[in-house]
Length: 404
Image (tube, rainbow, N blue to C red):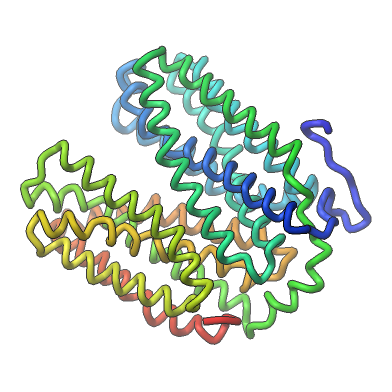
């Protein structure tokens, strides 16, 4: 099979007309998880590389912020075009090429000798990564249909594994080899993943649309329902990123040591990874709205507890806080297919991820300015109030869902 191969069909959607069986569903899920882990790892790997680039190129903090912004910006803004490419060339070819492009960008970064070269390399990698979220999540949702919520929670959990593994791997590699060689090593991994996707990702069916579309359109006003879900996703991301901005300062005010600060953040992230996995399964069983209300009320209560409790009990609560912070997202992602028709699944995921990524980029700035005005405690309380603001939106969403 050629790496860039795709076959045309009478429907104009290549490679996507075969009814999936349980084996092909599993392959779609696990290869999507592999892509998610790699691309999310590539995204967060930049944090480990910024100090190295600052020392090697003499960059200012502003220049470092530009590097991070270029990757995140290209990834966010190109997700909708990625969905259109998939409709033209097929999910498999588009996702494989995007993964190859993401790896190529880091390989080019290894050859860069200037800030301009790094910017171009990260733009290439961010462009490639723009394909992963809408296409992989859309593929999982289509092959599993009405049962997609639990597999999507596994898919989302895999992204957290990549965020943990690749930054740690690059940090280790740059201690034993030049950073350029380390980038070439991790880019090689990306090329291999792209080849595996091109060779082994099953065709993602669109023929099942006639069956599943009736389910996805069964709620009234699916467009307005998606808008409400989108709003919840944006607010939920704002709460998470806003709190993570202030949490180190809250803990520092309680007298935490610098080594323990890393442990505290690790506890939150470990809880967050568990939350994505567990809450997705819970949502599939007890309902979307009940799970969202539970996680957001838990988030608000635990934020206030961490603010006012002494250091030791606050540290004990951090893993549970991580579960609540990240748990909502799995339920939300798993609900996207229910509020959109099958042929628009990739576009819906692209819109949803674009909104949440933009919220993650902008909300720390907004809360940061608020913190300058009313202090760290006041701004952190504002994140708890934002979590509470999700309650009425979730209740309005309830009638739009097939299961609540």
